[in-house]
Image 1 (cartoon, rainbow, N blue to C red):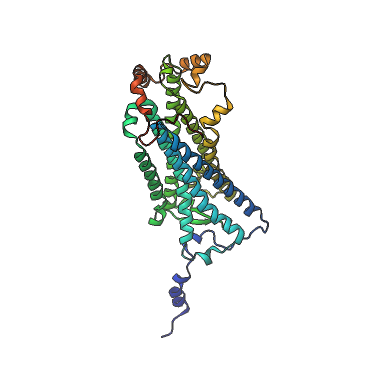
Image 2: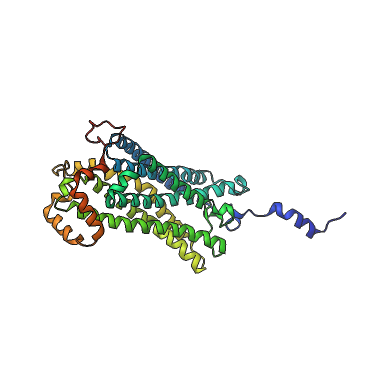
Length: 385
């Protein structure tokens, strides 16, 4: 039996078909022979990994010495965030740096797109995790400040760890959607990374919107809850009975959380909005814009650990040694500023403030949230970190 050329091409076609991840951008690409890209990627990844590793060590030592339940839970959330940033840089950075050094051919190394799909999943997973963790931390602080009784009885260290794991599972499930047929991961120019396919096709558009809206919603929740928490905390700190309960650690945690939210917003909003606008407008986009906003987003993993490294209570005590950090609240040390904030926040949170006034009327109950952890030595008075 003699087969016609068309029949032969039909039979041989499937084995020679272009894999999905290379259907838009197929290697090899033209490369700049300078080492600028490899140098930048190596320095950026090295700085991020060392910063996160140092922050993890500092967090571990601080957690070992802390006596406050609310602070220990917050440190667990913060540790989960720093660990996630560290792993994100380690996984994605090692692939990018390896490519810039060796210029390997993706189609030869990964003919079935398994490696490209893994990197695309890593980009989505490690991108969403910091945003979701930031929103989770905002919820925890909102409950801790506005409903201290409920928080002191519900949020244990084991539950905080379980919450971090649930955030990882949620982000992981979203990153798996393209493998289930909703969207796809594509090799992106200049061939060093894979990411979700930004196009107007229904499946790609749906996944792109899911990724963007989950990230933007997380930032919106963080902004809303952190704003309410700050107003409430200022009202309590500036109240007439502010000395009945220490608020220095809560102010420290809120400052760190606000900075984490601000950094995430600056780094991620441009990329998330860019993806949403592109898939909805049905227009082609400039790859240079995508690369620019992606670099902004990856900067979040480098800046996050420095929030805790630089804005710790021990560092603030060294910067302002004359301030009385042993009792009362930070803002209550300035009567004029305290009066101004009291007028500013009066009546803005009526129901919440009434409950907190009741808390201040019972300082013994209010201290239940900051009871020492059972496993800690009660003789430890402060953290050396």
